[in-house]
Image (cartoon, rainbow, N blue to C red; front, side):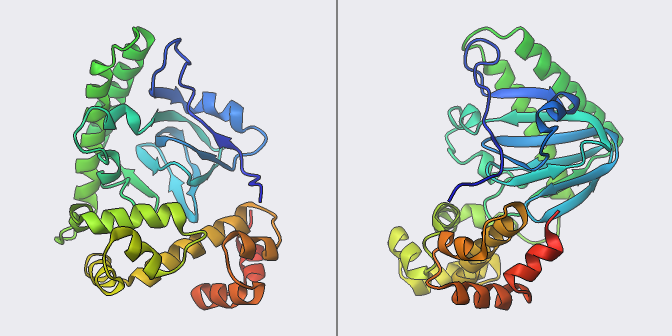
Length: 292
């Protein structure tokens, strides 16, 4: 089934030789979104709002974005923002490979608090002083890019790392609950499970499949997922499947029968029943209520 949502890939050779990081102004990005503001990216994006106020949606979460706000999105998430009311800002964009090739932790980016696997899209409002500091660092990144020489990426990596660490600290402070929010990342099985579900939830809905992939029993998988995430492995899988169903219902015009087939439900009626149990609405009702 074809996806009608525009997908934008990273322009790796924009500056001549390959470079996997960039800073672009939102007023420049708007030119590409003139016809359809709904889109998805294949790379990480951190958007900083500097002028204007408007809505910014990622998947099924909509935020009221104002100056000093920062919005985070991961590859594959469906984005839609008010290009008329959000006047300008900056998008710090990069491919995971740009940092993973430097650090021993190949999942460094996914372990950042605002990019964790399984976490929904997120927004952060920065204090003026910190926001000014980060905008200056973005300016320094842009200056470094403008004078970029092939393979000379060390300063760029350091500047990007600084921005990510400042944002990570601010995000943790904002969301601090006194609980250990690092359990997911510390547990290898949980992290691998979330990656597997992200990749295969469309076609694989059973706990047994993921337990087999991890070489552990379904009971043990359910135990560690429940203890770290507060819901069962089956519930986690179902949530992901239904999140994808919601995305297809809201952002495409595919028939309900095609969506059921895409998500590997045995029958359309089973899909409708499952969706209603999960959301309290039929797929058709959900589409009518939430479609832009």
